[in-house]
Amino acid sequence: MKQKPFGQTGQKTSVVGQGTWYIDHGDRKSAVTALRCGLDLGMTHIDTAEMYGDAELVVAEAINGRRDEVFLVSKVLPSNASRKGTIQACDRSLKRLKTDRLDCYLLHWRGSYPLEDTVAAFEELVSAGKIGSWGISNFDAGDLAELADVAGEGRIACNQVLYHLNERAIEHSVIPWCEAHGVAVVAYSPFGHDDFPSPQSAGGKVLQQIAARYNATPRQVALSFLTRQPPVFAIPKASSSSHAAENAGAGNITLTDSDIAALDKAFPLGREPRSLPML
View 1 (cartoon, rainbow, N blue to C red):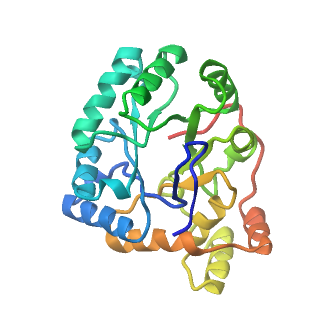
View 2: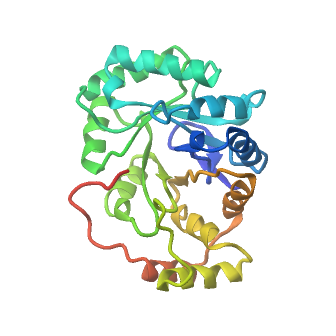
């Protein structure tokens, strides 16, 4: 599994990681086994959130005895993101995850509390050793610039955003801003939300053709395409060991310029939307 620097944190983590949204809705034993399989295959970046129900409890079981292998990320809800509320939310997540630290802690999306308050809490948590770094999710370029003015250059570790073949809006402004400022971009729902291109579609056929050349799967090709730019990581969810193994296989594929051009044509970027898409 390829690794690359995670923003300006000084840490490296796997290009393809493991998401956990809805992971608590299925068989728990299978979910734990899938996460452990992912770790075995080098997908050391595990992402969760207080919003995800019992996902933090599932993650805690999966990483038991293996905490030092993991780049662990969780998120605070905007409704909890006051200075005091952020610290309390982090403590709750640490307790559920059965660990003393997070590698990165994110504001899930922008809410009503001033960014100054949330940033102050994040920095307090860094000083206390409870988090290694902090970032945000679902921020567009304008929000990122405003946050950088509040926090100072080099403090934002990452921005986690919606990114898949049929939703490439972040390529217009978000990825360029993040790359210019040393901020990691983490793609959530990288296969879309139950709308991955079908084999019969024009785009699906292109995916299959490229996959055949690499003895890979269309989903592996999609992940490789999405993580082709230096700052971008992806966190697909896997509910079984076989899915985890498939996701991990994407970390060893390097697409050619002609592959990228073909996918770019099959899944056109489109115009920049007025607001950042999110789930």
